[in-house]
Length: 282
Image 1: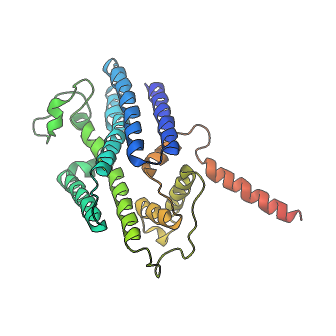
Image 2: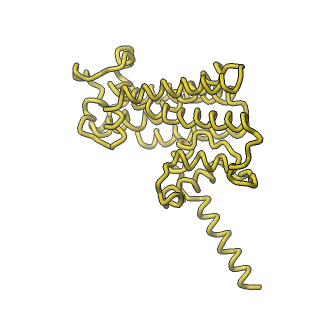
Image 3: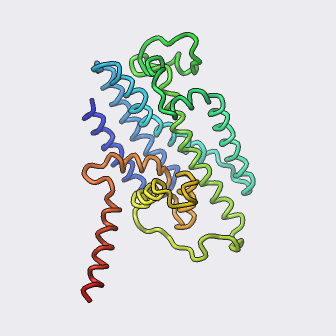
């Protein structure tokens, strides 16, 4: 199973990257990516439906981690498409209100699922056999209506909810970035407190910048570590005049690299050492 999952991930990651590099219209980009993910998901469904898991641990891992990570992307890009298609053509305030309403609904979702969200994000495992095995769940569990329409061979009681959690986390970043851009457009001449004073544009690859951001966050380089990855990414986007898009997914791709997973950092180390060596030899 591991080899199949690795191959299928590499396949759709490459296709998504190609689409993102060649398509600058977010609606067209989302439509193409949704099409790719639908095909991938059909392959995954067919594979798992005919698969006998080695044990319960393997089945739990698939429905708790593997499937939600993939399905969340399909949910996310579908939501992005809907957000953009329904964006009002009115004033900046109209658009901001529209985006804030969507963020409010996402917040309500997390509030209504706080206990499960805390369970999932805390890394707890004691209820996994109820949440992530394909069996009839305890009647006392709170189930989404989706559960009763699911394919019992390809779903558990809570894998869809994990997918929504991951998708909504990514969507929250996307919506907040949209609001930041709207605020910039609303006050284009308000540069008194803008940072930085000189606007520089990142012209390297997005994945390279994401690699740097996660390394800075891990090393607690900003505010003595009293910030989170979302805040740091938003600041870097503003400072370097770039939209990183789904940087969570980009980091997932970095983690799945073969060989060195820190390709850009390795390159920077080499460049800097070469520069110092050249100066020493002058």
